Length: 456
Ligand code: HEM
Image: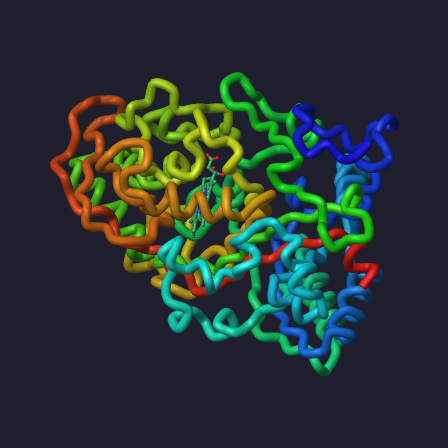
């Protein structure tokens, strides 16, 4: 029975009754797609192949000796819970459309990838999402990137050693165009955060039965069918059993000082006092720094970070329509757009990102998010989110403005914010908040099946 990508039941990956094709899918799928892999420390290599045979031999060897399957990852996780035994590091690979050509695939073969956004490559799609011109990107990203190699683990030592080993195996014909170092950030509660100081990575489409069962789901259903992230790998030996996922990779620099100043200015402008000042930033993000959803609570509430909420009955006076998480997941519609986000923060800080130190103590650059997300279709998930929702000042309601975190494009429209949580009185119209996240480069990749890589 072919893998049912639209199956409306969470996947019980270790069920003894799993059909042969689904088992084969899990044995040939890369980890970190259906369930996030630990990658507190991460090395990213951006590679160009200049000899098809050598590039193929490198990837074949990498996949055969250093890459595990999704199933092995899930088994390691289960064993960790039972025995406390640490799992093995994550090695993931994405190949761009230019990369497939460089590995010797014909135009006809590359055209088997149905997604036009992938087939075009990120540089060709910048105007659609209002990205900066390629000349303004960091040098590595201006070049033709063929593959991204992701190496992740809980400790830096294993990641560094594995990266050096992999670099040592690269053929002389290949070139490392760039390297990134991802470094996880956590708040005192232990939750992963991004550089503006907010809990991140909480809301995710969930595919596996164990993950879905662990989530309260009274109003928001966290389950998504596999097709949200997976598609048959068209160049694999057997696309009925071998699957992959489109991977969007974007280096997003964050001007933390400017964002913190904007939070303060907004709080002052609305005359917010005491703990209510925290609402200013929450109106931009849609959650308080500790992850409390603004649509549910007027103040940060601590405890486990909730994700079982929708915006029913919230006309924008609790959580503005423009808030980052409301723009990128309105929840009452457009479920099929949500992506499996697997980003990692980069850059080191001398200050504490979660605390209330003044803006002048904050970095203006050199830190940010290596945004990564797995998609069943880039055109209708990542690209759609950025273009039609985040960059759209009229999304859901006229006059709401761009997404204050990731919105790109003209900010000429004036916007208002609710003066008090849930109350109809609005502030006088004011300029939209300035852009504090800058795209420094990126590429669209496909994370192929292990069967494809091992058969190269
Ligand atoms: C959620 C920050 C880039 C899409 C979040 C959350 C934070 C955040 C704090 C809340 C945590 C959660 O609900 O899991 C950021 C920052 C970014 C960034 C600082 C850039 C530096 C992006 C991009 C996209 C995106 C580029 C897609 C175009 C989403 C989505 C959610 C989310 C879909 C989940 C919303 C939900 O389901 O409620 N982000 N983000 N983010 N972000 Fe971002």
